Image (cartoon, rainbow, N blue to C red; front, side):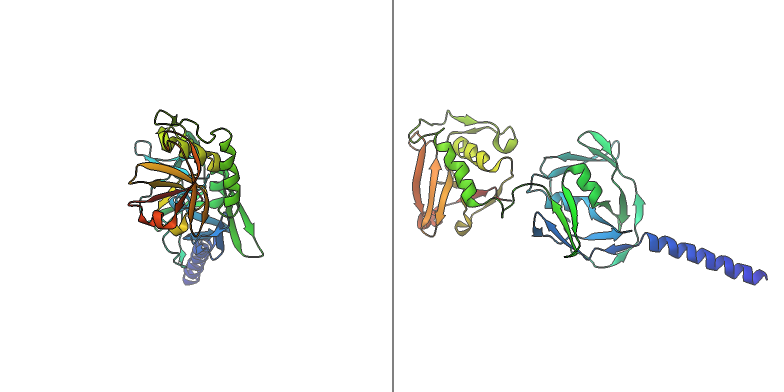
Length: 293
């Protein structure tokens, strides 16, 4: 009888243990993820029917959108600090390849301070990393999370114009509208300045002030990316030319070159100058600043 009781107790204990593991098993998320319509591969887990993502992976992915947020650490209070609208600083290790494996999640209760206020976001620790419920993150940080059942796809939407929606023709219309405010030949030298570039207190002068003002008019507070590929130049891109001494903004692009608008060209505003593709390729240190997401 004693042996039967021991076996029964062991069986109950194992059943309870298995119940705990099964209830909170972390299974690698097999669903596709679209961020503003673009496929992104996350290392994410499904726990009890909800998807959990690494906080830094989400911040990294949204860095070029209006849903961006910065992450900091308060060592004194052992708190994660989140600030919406700020650029996320990459630390390395973001966007690791999905493992496809099942893992054991441990409940986590990190202190999170969002824009100065303490918030609660459900989280689990998996393999030494905190994973946060995606829907909770979206609700707190202001981006939308939805589910496309027909295509087995998680949709993350920051509610902004994306590359597909922000067409070059729409950007052109926004740029050319400035021609009335800044007409051809209007005096424009280095004394001209602009102090709110991309929504920050960044002071620009002369040609950069003109290009920055028009760029903000077309793209709002979207962040910048930089490259030097002449073949990838788009309407609305800002070019840094003449040995890094002059900034212009692109009004039109074709296989022969670009048409630009510029300030401080012979101390005046100038619309419609053509720079050929050959001239662009010959530019030493050409820098292209684009703000398309």
